[in-house]
Length: 154
Image (cartoon, rainbow, N blue to C red):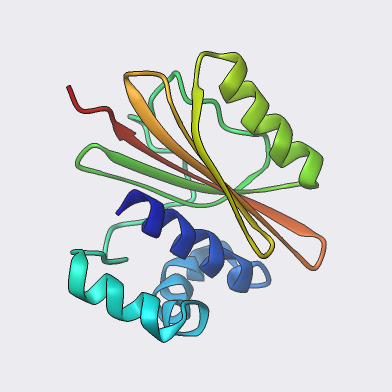
């Protein structure tokens, strides 16, 4: 579910870059139908309790895990919900997005998997305490990094 959530958020962010941050939550909700192919939407409906109906903010959650570095940029939205954290931030360029990923790897997060879907790059990492899905998407010169964090089981 984390992988699907990260992909959906990263894709929706590409559509919301030109809007103001206060409208991001509504834009993300409405963009789902525009961003995801019908078969992905059906998969979400059948197999998950996926919902964008969580309170979002433009502030970094106060309980954000300290071990998970955030690239420097402008926060588009964030949320914290029952052991899951998510943050979307615009960064100046692809190099900045890659540098943020390298900081996580340098601080002890190992790569579990990597995927590239069009202009969306998704890397899953873990340090044994937290699982991180680090996704970034470039669209018309703007780069958005989306980070989803969950606590590792066990």
